[in-house]
Length: 114
Ligand SMILES: [Zn+2]
Ligand SMILES: [Zn+2]
Image 1: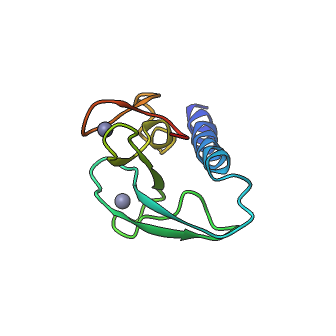
Image 2: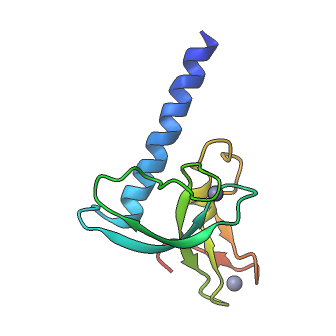
């Protein structure tokens, strides 16, 4: 019984991550290259990812092999690039991350669309 609940929760997390990406990148009808980084704690991968329509989202990290490469957002204050916590928290095991992102460099807020 408990196992079923966990499975459903896992499917929901994957679906939520996919949906967040869908919203973030628009309708996804064109291939896109984005400056991105691995959203998993403990992995420092950064690079440009080429995403084609139909590719799994999020893309698999070439460094840690987990599906967690997310787009970088720019801090409006200092220009620092980092992955938004609201996207990172859609990855498995990272649900406790804050809903809003604080810049690791200057501490200012970074929001989607800035
Ligand atoms: Zn990684
Ligand atoms: Zn900043």
